[in-house]
Picture 1 (tube, rainbow, N blue to C red):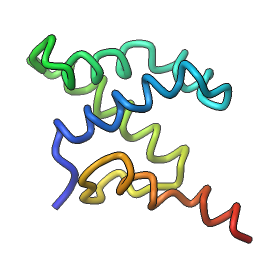
Picture 2: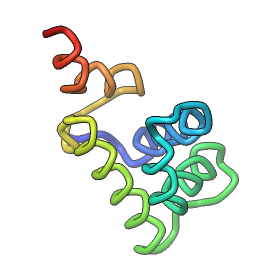
Picture 3: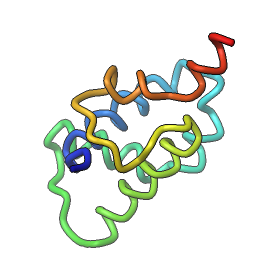
Length: 95
């Protein structure tokens, strides 16, 4: 089982907000200038995810974020805290 699309949008929405305050996320935010805001809008129920393009933008952004953090994009996460607790960046900091 993997993370539901709406949970992915919830997590990406949190990243979208955090990216405005975190200088480490500037490039990620610039590159994902459609996927992050789209996930935020879906999460806030301001738009409905319709069409393959919309789904593709969010899924691509999810995959890129997961790869950059060393997190399995196919994992089953319940929320941002659960997702981020699987980051390999945390493992590197502990060493």
